[in-house]
Amino acid sequence: MEAPRWPYLRQSYLANRAFKDSNTIINACCGAWNSLIKQKDKITSIATRSRELQVMN
Image (cartoon, rainbow, N blue to C red):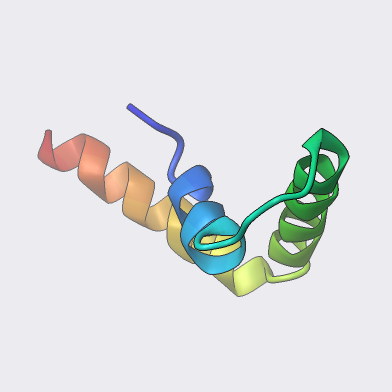
């Protein structure tokens, strides 16, 4: 099962973008990650949803 934080990062920060080179991709991923870790409530929400999905399966 894919870690739930990656779909959120893709959807919220990385989707529908064209990247110039690998350094641009790395910088975008780091920026997305840093934005996510500043959002404590969002992390809690993602983790809670992940546990709920595991219980349902």
